[in-house]
Each structure stands twice: as C-alpha cells, then as structure tokens.
Length: 197
Image 1 (cartoon, rainbow, N blue to C red):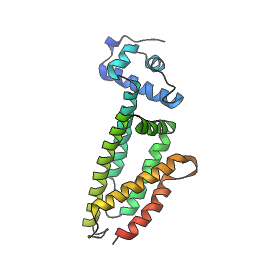
Image 2: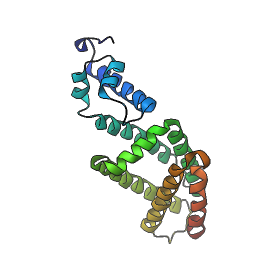
Image 3: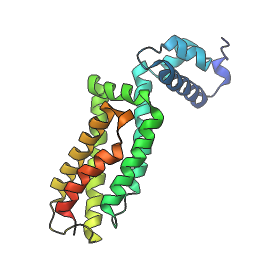
Image 4: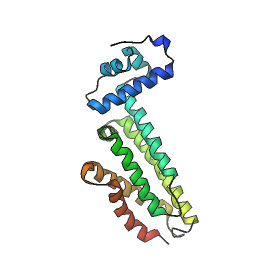
C-alpha cells in the first residue's frame, strides 16, 4: 500500500478519494463486511484521515444516501403536469434504473434506514420533501386541468406516497423478477381513475 502524504492533497480531494474508495468497497464486499482499513488502503490515505472526514463508516453511507436522494429529486423535477400518470410512470422507471445500477448497496442502504436511527431520521426528512414535491406536482396538474379541481391535494399526496412506498417495498423484496415501474403503474391506475379529469 502506498500512502500519499496527506499534506500534499487538498481536503476536498482527500474526502473524494475516501468516499469513492468506500463506495467501491461497499459495492464489492457489502457495507457490513467492508472495513475502514480496506477503505483507507484503497484510497491511499492514513486511517486517521478517514476519521477526519467521516467520523464512522455510517457517515459515508449517509453521504451516499444524500447523493442518491439528489439524483432521484432531479427525476421529480421532470414530472409533467400535462401527463400526470405517464410522467409518474416515467419517474418510477428512472428510479428503478438508479436502484438497479446501485445493486446490493441499495439493499444495504434500505436496511440502514430501518435499523439506524440517524438514517431513519434522514429518510423521514427526505420523505417529507418528496411529499411536498409530489403535492406541488399535483397542484400544477390541477392548474393544467389534467386532474380534477375538486381533489384534496393532501389526501391525494398521502395516497401517492403510500402507493410509492408499497411499490418500492414490494419491488425490493424481489427486484430480479419484477419491475418497480409496473408495480407502481398498476397502483397508479387505480388512483388516477378517481382523480383524473
């Protein structure tokens, strides 16, 4: 192992190298099996340098969660109020592509959001933002007259969030033999029969 003198590398570069090495190691060996020693060896830094940027291995996973969350949020920004059901199905396909690309690491992340209180809080905060963005999307669809004007946006958003969460849970239980977009699309059809114009 060659350890580059940390003084010769800017902090942002060190953090990025540690993060990249950790994520690669999590993908290769699984989050639980990957050790900090393996991560610093792959990053070419001293062990203390890891802890300067990430107090624990879980902090790397939190940074990874935030990165994936931003990527998924970009997909929500593309929701088209002129085609609410269709754009939500496209959103589900986009999310499925991200989750499939990340593979087993997404399962580790899901487990962490259920077992680690800090990750669970992060996930709940993210869910609140998701709900606000979905509610805004539904309001824009009402303005575009592609959804009925008399729907209760809060109730429709809650239903949409429940459908999404249920589809994701069902898909994550068996991702090889199912499609998130199809699971979500089937549930959406029932919702949109009640709220479309």
